[in-house]
Each structure stands twice: as structure tokens, then as C-alpha cells.
Amino acid sequence: MIPDEKINDLLHVYFGESTPGDELHHLVLATTAPDEVNALGLPDPDKMRMSVFAIAPVGSEEDPGRFVAKSIIGATVEMAQRRHVVHFAVLTMEIHTIPKDGNEVTENRARRMSADNVLHEHPDAVEATQLYAACRDGRRWHGQHILTGPHAGTVIGPELLHGPITDDEDALWPRLVRQAVGI
Image 1 (cartoon, rainbow, N blue to C red):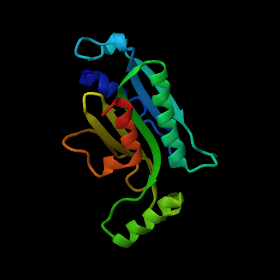
Image 2: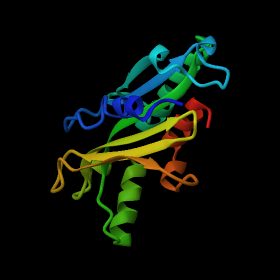
Image 3: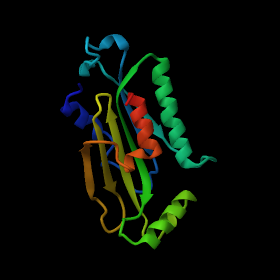
């Protein structure tokens, strides 16, 4: 099991350090070679290698979400080709979001704009850094750092998630992060 102190260090590498307008995502994978684990399959935290992937879909012809997904898959495949076992993965993404206010009309409009990749044009849109992380032993974390708008500077988490997978975690990127670590 990776100690909590090591996990907390990894969670804070890129989380909370974002600047509005960056639109840069990071994927951090903590890996070991198969022979660098003990008899129970647990890694020696001092032997873990950190691989950092900067994902910048800006200017890409394809859908930014698809680009991020392909990048996560590509990084996972690269680790498998190196015969490395991924024990921990954290994804931080610069996103546009709107605060949930319970207004169904506003939220439906935001969903449509998000599907068309123009959510940043919504009058209530704010930039935020979204974090999702997973560990091979089943632990999961999420967090959000609001970068713009009336709540700029607010940091929520990272918080350890308990229990079954939530609806928010059932989205594409969290699923890919969990798959990267084998859960």
C-alpha cells in the first residue's frame, strides 16, 4: 500500500497551482517494474517512478475530450509496453463549468453548450481545475480548484472517496484513470 503521505504529495504536485487560461491537463502515473513489488504485490514507495504527461488539446482539430481520453490511453499503453505496473494515477484538468444552482433550464443549457464545446461562452461559466485520482488498492480522490468567478481561489479537496462509484465518477476520464491502475 502506498502511504498516505506519498499520495498527498502526488495529489498536490499540480493541483492548486493552475493559472486561468492555461487549458493544460496533467496525468501523473506512479509505476514500478513487476519485480519491484513485495510478495503481496505492494510497491516499495521509494522505488516508484513518476511519469508526468502534459496534455494540451489547444488547437487540436479533434474534440478536446476525445484528445484527453486518447492521451490517457496512450500513456497507459506506454507503461504496459515498458512492463511497468501503474499503482497510482492522478489527472488534473483545466475545465469550464457552471455552478449548480438547481435551475434546470440553466443546467440544460450548460449541458448543451458543453456538448458543443462552447461552455466557456456561458455567462456563468468559470474556469476550474478538476482532479481525479485512483490507487491500485481501490482508494480514489477528487477535488476542484475554482480559478475565476466570484469563488476564485476556492479549493475543494482533494477528498478521499468512499463506497461505490458515484455518478460523477462514471464519466469517461475517471473511468480511464481507474482502468490505468487496474480497478
